[in-house]
Image 1 (cartoon, helix red, strand yellow):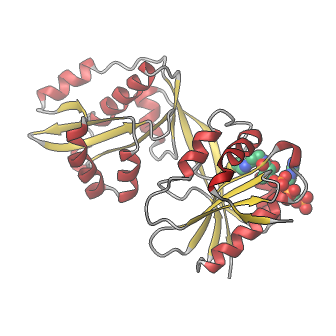
Image 2 (tube, rainbow, N blue to C red; image 1 turned 60 degrees about the vertical axis):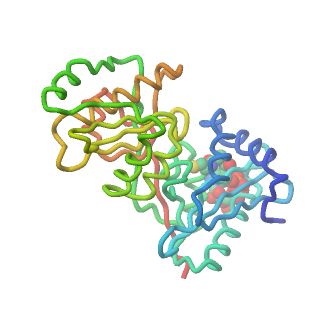
Amino acid sequence: MEIREATAADTAAISETARAALVLDAEQAPSLVARLLRPPQGRRWRVLVTGDLDGVLFASVSGGDGSAGYVDLLAVASGSQGMGRGRALVTAAEDWFRGQGAAEARFAGNPPCYAWPGIDVRYTPAACLAESLGYERYTVAWNMTADLTADLSTRPDLTRLAGKGVSVHRAGQADMGPVLAFVREHWSDNWAWETEQSTGCHYASRDGEILGFAAWGARPAWFGPMGVAEAARGLGVGRVLLRRCLAEQRAAGLTSAQISWVGPLGFYSRAVGARAERVFWLYRKDLR
Ligand SMILES: CC(C)(COP(=O)(O)OP(=O)(O)OC[C@H]1O[C@@H](n2cnc3c(N)ncnc32)[C@H](O)[C@@H]1OP(=O)(O)O)[C@@H](O)C(=O)NCCC(=O)NCCS
């Protein structure tokens, strides 16, 4: 089976293949493809397609030591499934990973530019494909869903915070520099990259010092990232920042938001009644 590297001329066909294969995400498939085609600078990545463009695989190598290769997106159009295209694409990606010096291949998100944290368990044939190629399931991840018709008021919290000298702002263009510096200092370049891609960003400060931030819209329906500096935790800053972002997403016409690759289940559940919903299996395989 012919597998080759995609060219710019293949972009429309790739989007169509992704839309036709990703039945749980058909609407978002073109924007996922567009996102993966614009990763952060310095990332090593490659798009492989079948000769007939009915199958596509986005591959990348981890930043830093480059020890892991990631299958970022795999899609075979529904009418062409079950004929070996998926297997051939993954095998070709593994060859490329080896050539890049990667010791391991993963079906997992390569932050900060990823489609999902891993294989959504409901894409069961993809999990079967990974297992049949010798991949081991090593952990589980999940997204949470926030219902935007819920109560997202912030007034009492804002009054209480004001009493402690804390104010909350929407980040305008001039604020983004200091906010991104705060994100880099307390978390990572990865989070700063995602925050830069956001549609809306809010931050809390006291005496000119940023205490926490939250962003949404790096992908239209997605919330995150968000973080509160350790010294400011427990004040209720996170809850206000979360609610401010979600209220903006509601104003933008959304009825629910995805909180991706969640850590603190209890925080999101208590703050806005979010529920764990999409569950992902992460797979890996030794390439040596
Ligand atoms: C997952 C997917 C890429 C597989 O591509 P494919 O070309 O159909 O797969 P292949 O024909 O190469 O099959 C390879 C192996 O995958 C597994 N597999 C493929 N289709 C399967 C199905 N319907 N049920 C169970 N296992 C399946 C099998 O283990 C198969 O090997 P076998 O036939 O020797 O048992 C394709 O089903 C797809 O695009 N699905 C929707 C998109 C998707 O799930 N992407 C991943 C999102 S996280």
